[in-house]
Length: 368
Image (cartoon, rainbow, N blue to C red; front, side, top):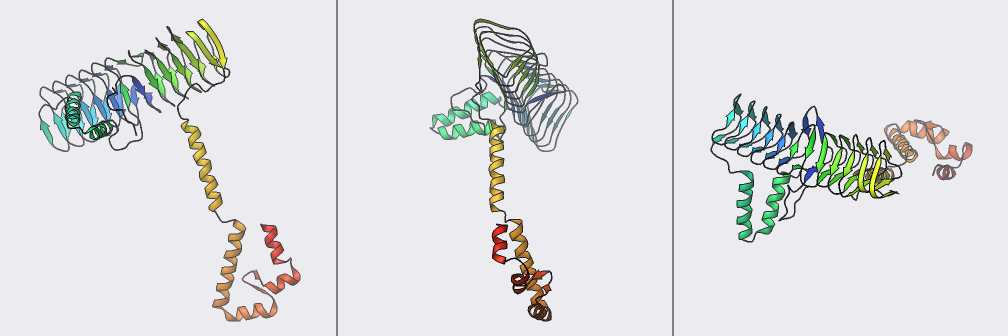
């Protein structure tokens, strides 16, 4: 669950969660997408819930599995497809069509070029902008001393049903496209991501096993995690560049200080104004989910092995039960087996085993 401490700004940085990809000019994520005001997203967006503040421009379509909220003056170049409810503020422009599986709350002067369709209720009014609504609601809760309720409201807005995936957070005034991701705030990229475009931020942290088809540039520190590929340069104006194990930088590295793992690869030139050193550290302090998953799987397999009955014991008990059942069903067979020392349904009697075969107890001990 993604939680935000009360009083903090959830849009104070660019946050790309684990597993986010850019596929055929679409930003694809399993979680929510939250975009700050006056931002530009040049490609389409596919996520669970999509929330955009005022004057956000999308250069493609929007596909939301859950709700979609577009505040006033937003502009979407293509279709908007919503799996649940939609809230469209006044003077929003949609270049394609609007399809809503649930209810539609729509404001005045909304321009939808190819029409709209909703399966639920359609209410024509001016929905309160998301930020204004949250501010008013939270201020009232804080005024009456309901701080716990205010924290729950923030968690529900950013989580909506206990989804395990963190949202994509794009700060106010950002510009995101295939060419470049430009923000004036710190930026964090998760593990197992695949992004196109150069990333420009105040500081940068790129997770593990991520591929960035572009360069990294920041004013402060840059951290590149384990197994990540940067198909471009890594440059910081006045910070430190730290590169983790197995990472590969296809271009140059420039920084005040460069800390390179001994197993990392740099195809270009390393430039530093102060110090360059090799290290063997992991670089990132994040929990290694892959290692945790492997440990959990190993514990599960060990538990299954301990609780599973050995095959030999299970076979002996099954044969004994089948012999007892056969003797109960056919008394003549049981008498014959007891008299002649023969086999009853393939099971050797105890007397026959003691005379002609190995001792039963020794056999059991050897099997163990």
